[in-house]
Each structure stands twice: as structure tokens, then as C-alpha cells.
Length: 252
Image 1: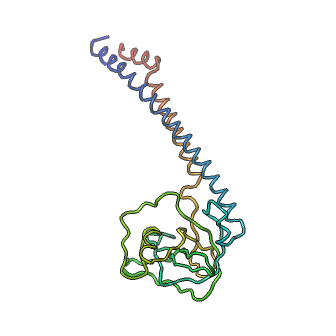
Image 2: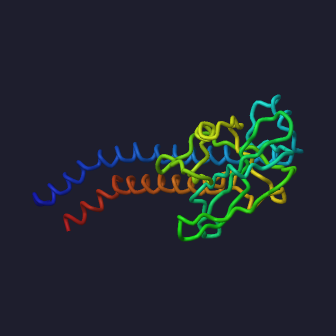
Image 3: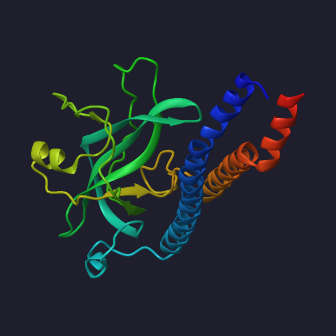
């Protein structure tokens, strides 16, 4: 074996600890991320099952909710009037490949219940963002049914909301504190999402989760596959057979 061959083999052998360190870090990390995705799949399935249970329950009144701790996805039936002086258009809502808005209008229940903001559903928008869509009016006393919704964490915003000099307001997400400050109306800090067929409902449908449980399982398979690939690659690069084979070639 000449000095150049011996030096090259020695250099390669010195790289073995680095490869083993890579495997020691990358393989457990990939396996851990795979099991985390499986846990997320289970959480999503439990959430969907609980939401399905709540949405299949009979609607209750707003007064009956006082005895319930968690209001998310609870169905309610409310009688009252839409206050079309106060409508918010939630922008950047894309459906069917088209940009549009979700229409949220203040609703005054009959009796002593507090007002609430009702999401009537989606309306298509145009290419000119300065021209807002015409919102179909809803007049008179109506009975509406929907479920209560509020995100678990603050919604991501591209920038601060801009308050317009006239209605409707155009927001990225509902800001209940700002709405109360500018209107002087202490509405419930919850969004009532109308069910299809309710008076005033537009295209009323919303996904419960943004990523389906099956997608998390697919991600887990990818992480486990990557861990196996790293492990096989490192074992192949550091196996004694590989060094014996390289040594025979060098001598040849």
C-alpha cells in the first residue's frame, strides 16, 4: 500500500466518528418526530370525534350555556334580529380557487341575552379589492341555528387591522375588543357560525382542522423512513466489510 492510499484510507476512517455522531443525533430525532406526528394524529381524531358529538347534539339557548364551561362547537338556537349597520368582512378567504370574504354581522337576540357576531358564511370577491361584495340583507325577526367558535390561540395576522371610516369593516380576523371599543356594544366574545339553511346563511361551511389526521400519519412514515435511510447509510459507510473491500481495491 503506498503512502497516498494509506493516507486516504486514514482520512476516511477519521470521518467515521462524524458519521456515527450524525446517526446518533439524526436517527433519534427523526424517530421522535415520527412518534410526535402519530400523537398529533391521535389528538386530531379525538378532536374530530368530540366536535362531531357536539355538532350532533340538539341546539340549546344562549342562557343554557351559562352552565357549560367549554362553549367551542356548541350548537345554539337564537331568535332575534340582524343589525346590518355593523358588518365585518373577513378577507383572504379562498374557496373553489376564488378569493372572497366571510360575512360577519352583529345579531341582537330577543330578551336579555347579549348581542353576538354571526358569521353568515362566504361570499366571492372580485379582482378589485377596493370594490367590496354586496351583502344580501336579512330583515325582520328570525330564528337562527349555528355553533359557537373561537380559536384556541391568537390568529396570525399579516399586519395590524385598519379601522375604516365607514362600514363594513374589512378585517383579517375578528377582533372583539376593537369591535366593542368602536361600536360601544358589549357583544359576546364568540363567533356564531351559521348552519346551512338558517336565515341569512350564505356558503356556510368551515373545516374543523386544517390538516387531516391521515396527513399526520403520512408525515410520520416519512420521518421513520428518513431515520431508516440515515441508519442504513451510516452502517454501510462504517461497516468492516466496506473497509476490507476498499483495502483490496487499493492494493489492486
